[in-house]
Structures are given as C-alpha cells and as structure tokens.
Length: 232
Image (cartoon, rainbow, N blue to C red; front, side, top):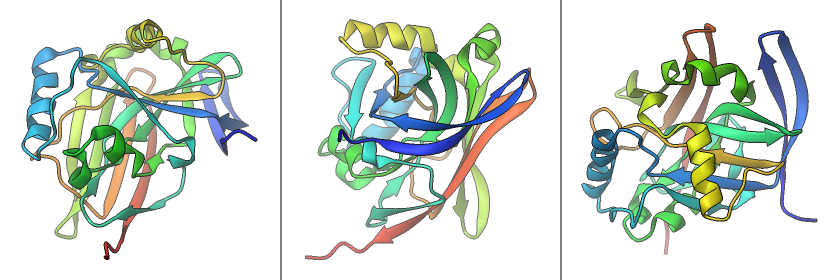
C-alpha cells in the first residue's frame, strides 16, 4: 500500500461544520513564496545569518515524506536546533480545495547543509480544521498567520504577518503546474511563511494560527517539541 496519513478533520463553511476522514498521500512544501519582494529578501537574509544558502529561484517546491505529517500535540526532533514556521496550507479533499494552517518545522542545524534534508528530518504539524478556499478568496489578503513560542517561561509572539505578503493560492498552484505538479486529491501543500520577530530560534513549544477577521474565525494548533539526544 502506498504511504499515506489518515486523520479526522473539521471542514468549516459558512453553513456549518462537518467532520470527515482525510487521507493525505503526498506533502509538498512551497518555499520562498513571498509576494512582497522586500519581505522575501528579509526571510532569505535571516536564514543566511544561520548559514542557509539562498534559493536558486523562487518559489521552490520541496517534497517531504507523507509520514512526516502530524496532527499530534507533541513531536520529537533531533537535538535542540529545530524550529517551527507558521504557514497556510492547501488540501484537495473530495474535489474541493481547502485552506488550513500548519508548521513547516525544520532542523536549523542541518539547514545550511541542505534545505531538503533539513525539512525531511522534522515532523510537519497541521491543524485539523479547514475552510473552503472559495469562501476566503474574495478577502484573501485580509487573512493573517501568527505564531507564538515559549521563552523564559512566557509565551511571546514569534511571527505575525498578512498572507498578502505571500503568493496567492491560485498563483502558487499555477507555479506548481509550471513545474509539472498539481494539487491532486489527497495532496497537501504548505504555502509559505513570514519572517520571525527577533530572528529564527528554537522553542520547546510552538503555537500557530490562521486568522480570518472578515468571517471572524481562527484555525489554531499547538505542539510541544521533545529533543531526541544526539549521540555518537
């Protein structure tokens, strides 16, 4: 049987909410998806400070093993040098495209050696609630992504930005098609992130949100990060 991840999700529309089982067979991470060139360069620069080489082109599409997708409230990560990134996600479920939220958790120690390897090393937590893309496209640029981390015993804002700074879902899907890919049934794709306030850094806990101020609703998830000792 091909690799897949199955979980129960809440699909929320203006008319109400309905639970359904989701089967994800492929995970794609859209990288360097900034629409705002200045903000994109800021993200490239902040990663360069920790040794990450700039991308060959933008955007780029990375594949990670579908088994890395997680809805758990705790993940394990090698060592203590990984960190989360809040992103909007797109999911094709039963022929309809849905929007959700996830964290492109990445190993920052390995990232300077190769982004694809660094992404593959970490689980990718996602929230289990989704909205129809067609319900939010009309006010897409008003949506926000936000994350919090735990520092010195307190929760602090780590990221806070509008999705207006990122390539829109339709444009991102068009870019994916140019690369020969498609958001087929059972494919989930991460759509990009915003810069970290105070720089990229690890945290034992990561909380992330996708906020829709027009329809007054929020998708949220949080998870703890348990370090796995590095030995040898």
